[in-house]
Image 1 (tube, rainbow over the protein chains, first blue to last red):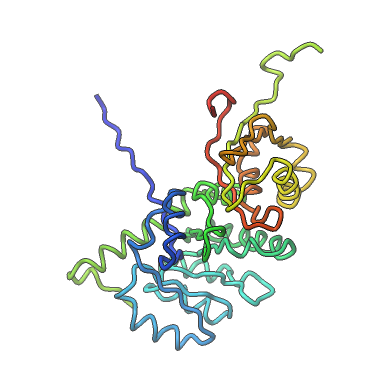
Image 2 (image 1 turned 90 degrees about the vertical axis):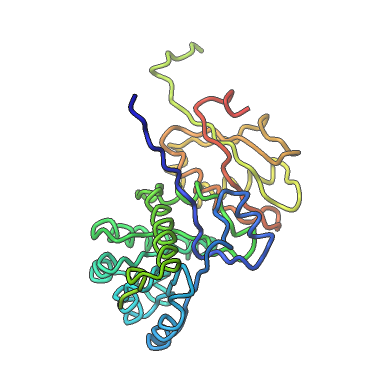
Length: 207
Length: 108
């Protein structure tokens, strides 16, 4: 008889902080993996030089390194650096989405994933329309150029948390694959966990 | 009125949700926020096609759970509308989907 291998998707909220115990227990109750099992570094600086310095110093201590984008230079440099895992909010303080064809191609080449920040959507209605339209454009580019994307709640209180399946539905409601988003999170964690645990040369992040 | 034959009936989905909040909310508070969120996310046009309906006799104030009926194909849109609710009567709140089914019986 043929046997089937069923893989169960592990649901990681990559940018969830593990400092608040109530938040962690609520996240686990909703079905997220325990955020204490992995460490995430989110960098937010106005200059690329400062970000680069922090990546140089901290890459080997964190499972996930993400950069909050904004300026064209930071967005481009982030997706050009294979040591960085996530580009978060590339359209910050910009009129456009900050994520264009070139950025998407570089992100695909260097395995940098676009991270959707769900907390932005909980802001006022007018902003919400812009965020959704930006997401739709960015996800379209990711799909076209085979770049990965993921979604995170960025919750700081338990009321900002959401069920992972509901976030999948949101991505699917925009016309893209929700499973793919969580597949990316799992791949990032597993890949970097192997690199952090091993002493072999393959466990080195190359620039 | 004569009952429609199965092939003519609209296929519907039932979505069971849970309210996460410090206080217990009654159905009327949720209904208001629910419609506001559905109209904000789906708009009147899509909402009219989805025909969402909060089933009153399936709402449990004790467990803070309820069931919404929606036309098939609009489940994801409705679930997204539910997660956009972050406040009910000035209290912080969030909703999560427990289950989706084609029959009410399976949700019990």
